[in-house]
Image 1: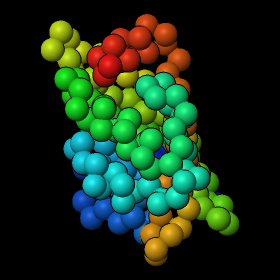
Image 2 (image 1 turned 135 degrees about the horizontal axis):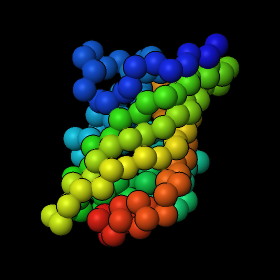
Image 3 (image 1 turned 90 degrees about the vertical axis):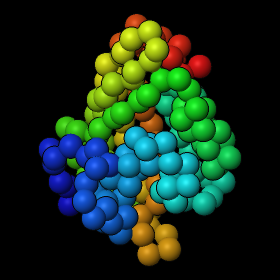
Length: 153
């Protein structure tokens, strides 16, 4: 089953339920936008096999490596808010795959950067709810990527 072009997911949705695919995605964006590492950890599967590949941290495997990157992002002077939009959710036997775009704003002491990226997230069911297993993100605009990396690091 495929659900396409649903409402943007911001993390501000009411009644976020990680037992549903949109709820698990909303939980991620809530954790990210609120800089909540404890909630972020709940969203990810507790496994050394989880992975993240994104423009800020390259390839990270296992929660300790992924956590370190989120902690670095959350502690940076940049305030980043993103939402997931123009996406499709593919229901698979073992999990679900969400493919779409992110947009947002990175506010820094010296100005703001509008962010645009392509992203995919794969979730598996564990402990009666959906947990993130893999994330891949790409920023196409080299200048935007450079400004964003400089703001975070």
